Image (cartoon, rainbow, N blue to C red):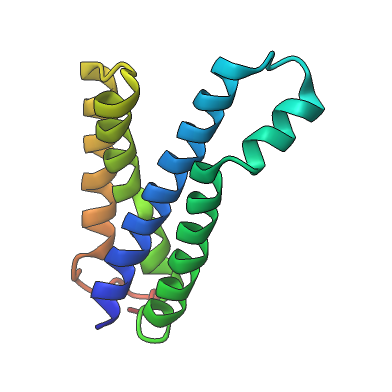
Length: 128
């Protein structure tokens, strides 16, 4: 259950950021982004931003469930999966670039987190 909660938290956090990006892009098309106050007010009252806020709140709830059973020092680095989700979704929905360097860099980070979360041999002086 904790692993499922962690995965849900990562997905909800990614969805929230996509909603926030959508609201910023929608408002930028309607208003001068240099009119800071109007831009801010229109952004935070946009339906996509509000959905993003709800997604963030739900993600926190999933985090609470996950952290009951998973150590934070292992759970938090797992959020790197959101980098990959955001990169692909931004490419699909916002026409952002997805270069080979970006894909390779995300891959390296994911491999690092996988190594960090894998069972390892004990090292004298370090506890598991």
